[in-house]
Image (spheres, rainbow, N blue to C red):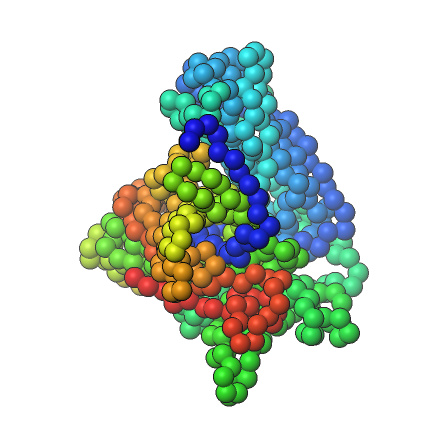
Length: 546
């Protein structure tokens, strides 16, 4: 067979599945959740200078976004409708035409400075785009979109956001769809000389003019969420006010028995899942304790699952437990692809972790011997800086179907607290890896940039239980990652970047995450074989494996 292979959609081939990537997300220094009484529109065109193989070139970066006009203390501020548009001049486009590139795909990363009074931190706004044609002459315009981290301010005062460094990765392809040589270009940009005074994006007042009906003093919201109970034995974190379980028939939120309107503290997730009577014969056991894992406004393809596992730090000859974490996934319809080796069922999905509304793991403690002799305890968080993507490929070869799944996600490792021999080492509020953790990608041309890659392999044998990792049933996902150098570590003028880099950073760090069975949120519950609780959370809670 030769030529392009047709891709067919099959309404019968609906694979219910979720995924998991290992770590995730983002807890910026100033957490937040917003009470919006109006919308603040941002449209900023900023001058940058970008370094390409041919040299430095001017570029215009346009940022558009929407913010709440104001927010209450301790409530989420979530930027929406965020787009990043990069206009490269003809001289820069020549670098792509020299590679005989016909199309190019872009991933962008904008560093945003966040400040409130004396507090400072940074967040990363990431975006991706579909491939666009490379013009024969003239400028090239690339527009990306993507999720950005929310913020929370735990004190009153103006919260300001400022554009800082900018970078993007380009994956060019030739007219016949092949990768160029090199297969990708990484471009870094700095604000131009005439950018001074023009890099401000938004200023959001916090703590003023709270709408009537809201409490004048909201309940305090900790900057760092509590670790999960299953990992530490500590109490489970409660849901933020206003988050409720999705409505389902026959529950307190279903028709005929409406729940009270407006924000409320506590939900079915806080009270634990509703399961069958554990004393009734033939019924499943109750679900173990687990953090809340609710999908807001679920769609037909919304899925969720828990993961947990271990990550090694090779330099320190130790392993860290990644606590039980909720993952929310939106998948596409499966497609049948006819290839030379047979028929493949392909499913794609995007998503991320959800810990108290943030895309991150719960904070976890690592206790290791630094330099082989100093007992060191650190509190860490893995933060997602771009979309989590999943690609599931099942070769339909009766009676044995072969499944391969790749999960990709850009993550930074943030250090919240360090103690050496019991003495606190002040690393400050902004200690993190200078770029995302990096794995060797099996398809770097299609997936440029720094990101973690986890792989799951399994077999689905007719008449037998599945073996290994299967999308809907879960199982082990493994990978290897390089931990980059650290930046922003230290307080009071003391720079600890080199100390943490020497202690932790480097290649060859093995990861093994265990995913539980997935919950397709809107499926009708099955009391005898539950995949979801009655309020739409994953029923199966996995245990970590080394």
